[in-house]
Length: 118
Image (cartoon, rainbow, N blue to C red; front, side):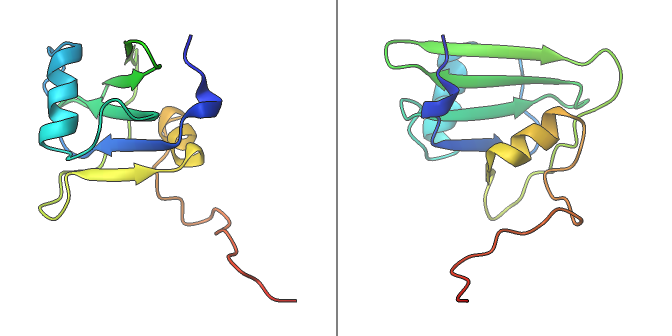
């Protein structure tokens, strides 16, 4: 099983990905295009052109998992590809928003407070 508590990073491949790939194809995208380690304790998300399907690649310590979700109605709020960086790091909250049909950028969500001195 996938131990979600051990996941340290979540990365979204911005833009469109051909979802006909298998585990080796996505691992090659992670290392070649995203410049990340597919064997890390990370989730890597990919979406198709119509934004109604996504795949998640994750290494569990001795093998890869390739998870697939197809929406029956609606679309994921997937971000377009950026010339600067094809990869966007997400928090677990942002992943939850994405899977619930929301944008990963919520303007009304509370922003984390860092180093607040009382």
